[in-house]
Amino acid sequence: MAIVPPARGNFLSEELDYKSALSEFLLLKIGAQNNFNNQRFYTQKQFFLNGFYEQAVGFAAIDGLEIIPFNAEIFNVAMFNIEAGISGTTEIDIKVATTSGGAFTSIFSTTPKISSLAPNFTWFRVGETNVAWTAPVLNSLVTSPIDGQLVRNLSEGSALRIDLPQAMNNARGCGLILFLRSR
Image (cartoon, rainbow, N blue to C red):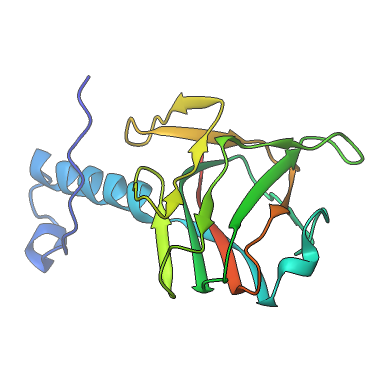
C-alpha cells in the first residue's frame, strides 16, 4: 500500500453538507491532512548553557533531566554557539537512561562539536558540514513509519541529560535542540 501524500488544505462546506455525496476525494483529503500533521507536528527539548560555560566541563546533567512522557523519535538535532571562544572546541553529548537510576549512554555515534574558528551566532543540524564544526550523528537508527526517515527512538519514561566533555576557552552561550515527535 502506498502512503497518501501529505497535503495541507481546508474543507469546503459543500463537501460536508448534510446529504451531500460522500466521495473518495473527501477521504483522500482527510488522509492527506492527517499525514501532513503526522510529519510536521513535533516538540523540542532545548538544552541551554547560558553565559560563559567552560567551567561546566566534565559535569553531568548540566541542564537537569528531561523525562520523556511518551514513546518518541528524534528526527533532527541542532547545535548553536552565541560567542566563539578564543581557542579550543566545544563538544556536547546527550545521554539517555531507560530506567530510573540506570546507566546513561550517548545518543550519538558522533557528538556535535564547534570550534573557535566558527563565527558568532553559528548553528547547524544533522548532515550539515563545515570546517568549523562536526555535525551530530545519531546512533541506533531505525526507519520512521511516519515518513521513512532514519530516526533515533526513545522509550516512554527514559531520561535525557546534557554533558559537556570539552569547551572553547572564554566562549559564551551554547546549546543543543532535539526535535522529537511521538511514535
